[in-house]
Image 1 (cartoon, rainbow, N blue to C red):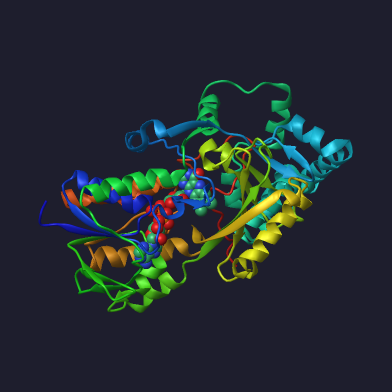
Image 2 (cartoon, rainbow, N blue to C red):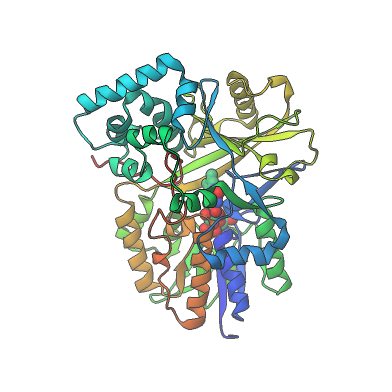
Length: 485
Ligand SMILES: Cc1cc2nc3c(=O)[nH]c(=O)nc-3n(C[C@H](O)[C@H](O)[C@H](O)COP(=O)(O)OP(=O)(O)OC[C@H]3O[C@@H](n4cnc5c(N)ncnc54)[C@H](O)[C@@H]3O)c2cc1C
């Protein structure tokens, strides 16, 4: 299709998958990337040969097409890995998902008895309302267990009190887990069947030998070989439009890129506010109201071959700010240049501009080292090096009004700028994992080839689709909704 040229904004999984599919369909594209790296949030950082992700990126999908895409690109470089991830609380490791016997032993007889008493109290005198995550969880498990297993981590991830998070989210997130089911599983083994299938899906995952970045660098190399330019350090800051279509986009340094079609993975808020002439006031207001949660990793190099066997640990301890620790050599041995060392990724959830985000790298490294020592996980003398990576807009926030705000923007773009398609995670303000972000890119490319048949907003409409939850499992994966005032 020589008459089409597509401008793709962003070289993350969605933009790269779209360009890859466009190439397959015989359509030329140019990718504009704000930063100097490939893979977006799914990149792998290389610090003196120590590699780490933004988070830790498991490759698994219920979509056969996506699994095949990954296999075709990386072949045997895509390793199959087992998962171990536990909760660390008060110097003890709790199995994750929670197993009652293990929890009882770890809590000790006194705390365990207090937990049971607090549960019974919640049965007899349940919290009055049922509005918040806190109400729901206290009613289901009692206040003590809520405080140990639910409160701290949830608040670290989302930066809001559990008393302000909607009870719907708890009901959805902690689906299938109840005190009765916990006690039952103590005495009766898990039934085989569906549960076992989900378990296999989640207990094993694929992972590129050198992290997710290896996948996206391979895709970018293939695009380069096929003659599609990828322009780095090209943040799109202005989108020039007529009344009926997008004409060209401008990067911060004044270069312009015209196209017949445009695909955007840049944050929806920024996209709308960069339209020229500006979008109507109501659309700008909707865009301005979209919120994000940000994230930073303090990566510490430890002069120790083995620190702990988990891929990652959830830190429920309220005395430290870190939320999770990744041990990247347990994801793949190739993530460290020398097996005598370990590289831990300490994860802090924050808001851009808050105290953590604005702290100097040296202060954050000192904080990480101090907290590791405080938890008793690593002798601070063994920490020999460190670096910090900040990721803005790691999570699109689902607040009271996000749905209607996205709807206002979507309707405007579909009406006024039909040659622009929104794809990916922040591009659609959707809590998408790689597979769904990729799927929107693939379908958008096909829409260009076939003049539009796929509804990209139907991808991942069911938030449960990708990561089904095992009993006892609570992660930061699904997004809580804030209570209305
Ligand atoms: C902590 C964490 C853990 C995760 N774990 C997993 C996991 O285990 N498995 C999984 O599948 N997914 C995981 N994800 C999700 C995954 O990272 C995303 O789904 C995926 O990266 C989204 O791809 P994308 O292309 O839509 O967006 P992004 O990855 O955000 O890429 C967008 C790209 O656009 C560029 N850009 C932004 N603005 C502009 C602009 N104005 N001009 C030009 N370029 C611009 C950015 O620099 C970036 O490169 C995780 C995410 C987080 C935050």
